[in-house]
Length: 109
Image (tube, rainbow, N blue to C red; front, side, top):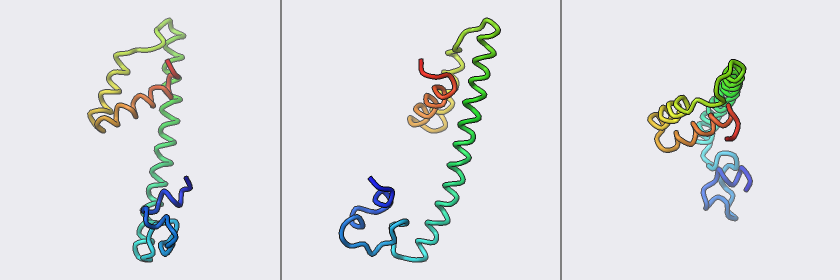
């Protein structure tokens, strides 16, 4: 599915293409507002990507350091703490986010 169709309501995806394709509206004021909001969303997305990558590198460093010192590959109590923190902050989706973060840092089990 193209990105243009994702942004459009179902009625805009049909033959009547009066709505602005990138914003899903033909109202210029609303389209400008949507574009400005999306610019901020893109900035936030990039910050999240950068933080995700930094967290992954740090987590991998912790794992290497722990293994090099004779420790275990994983500390399950620490992973449970992280999952619980995200679940409390974000609800059920937080659990999934935490599991993805943990996997990015340690690799699949």
